[in-house]
Structure formats: C-alpha cells, structure tokens
Image (cartoon, rainbow, N blue to C red; front, side):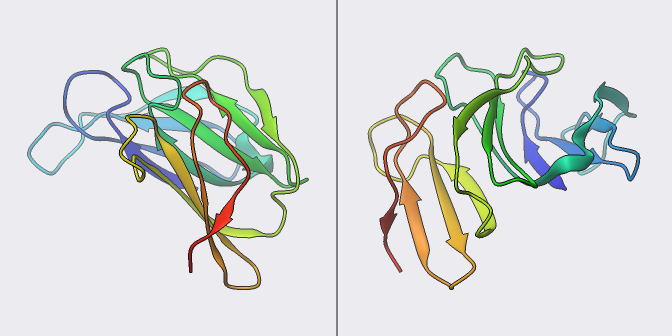
Length: 139
C-alpha cells in the first residue's frame, strides 16, 4: 500500500507506505523530489488492502480512508504527526480494486472514487465528516 498527500502539514507532498510486517511508514517530502528520512506512524496495517488520502473531515490535515481485507471501510483522521484510531465509515468494500480521494464534485468536500471488481467506476460523495453518500456509477 502506498499513498501520497501532505501528511506533515508543511506544504510538501509526503509518502505513506506499509511494510510486510504491517508497520505504516511516513516519508516526509523535501519539496525537491526526495524525502527527508522515515518514521513509523502506525502498526497493524497488514490487514489493509487499499487507501485513499485527502482531507476528508475538513480540518486541513490529510486523512486516510482504508479498505480492510474484510471489506470494511475505515476513516483515519490525520493529526499532522500520525493518525487517530480508525472509525468505521462503511461496509461492502471487499469488491473494490482501487480507491482515490479528491474533490471531484466542486462542493469543497473530499470524495472517493472506487473501481469495482466488475470494472465499474463509482463516485462516493464526501459528507465532510469522513463518511460518504451512496456510490453513483459514473463509468
């Protein structure tokens, strides 16, 4: 699993990645195409299949939406130096291949796009609190 966003709040894109042992590593970006080291910001991420990053709760800190191997979607609020404990945000996500966060609808809230195993592309409009409206097939 790999994701990018400004997780440290310094205006530079950072990288999050999991190691085989389930540790979640943060690689702060240096703004010139490199990183400035790494640190462990979580553990137990070996049951995560997919993640989407964005400010899903509107607090100006990068958050994560994570799909667990059992198909449960969890919201992890960013704290600027790690993440709060996950809160269940949905179920039935075991049939997803890809997820991506972004502001796709123009309402100022971060949404989630997902590609289902059947190939359909669905938009899940963000509610601004780490949860989403029912998905709408867009492609």
